[in-house]
Length: 282
Image (cartoon, rainbow, N blue to C red; front, top):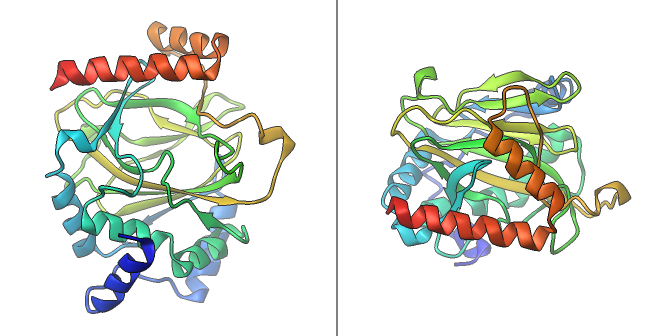
């Protein structure tokens, strides 16, 4: 079903609100918080989307079959994700259709100060992300340009779906100060919490500590772009990892391999390793 059709469906269910739209005054306050956030522009919002709506999404995600997921199992990340809009469960697709809408993008522009933001209908790098036992994602900076369109990656929106999550469950999103090589902010992935994160070459983030238990860590992720080109970003169309203090040796080795081998070779090896690990875990 197309984005337009999902939005029509959402309009037909107007009695079931999707989000709590901030007022213009609230948006101005949020914009200042975003701009001056440490260590780079970001915003943490609880309750931006309606809890009942997110509950329907969480319920349908838990029933997804294993063949709906693409594994990403390497030393640097252990998680799985959906691939594009096709095959998403109905309410999940409705969420992404809404975040792609002009209404939501206008909100993002008012918060970030970035004009002419564009969604990505392919959900490259986005969709549903799930990390299970021992899941993690090493500290990294996201791709700065879309590998197909060449558009510049400007904003990431992450909404968490983890009911009754506590610090003991782990998986906190860490935002790193790259000059000082340390975590500056730790964001617990609570149910209904949305993180709006500016994308740049210093926007380093991740959850490098492996999840200690069996509870899955669920997130909905979407990226937003501008046509603005920057010569410094043209070759930066893949995830870039950083060597942090106390990083395990196997992760350092994998980063070194990524630096040595061409991107297609690294991608093929990563996919092979992910598939082998995925088969062992079935």
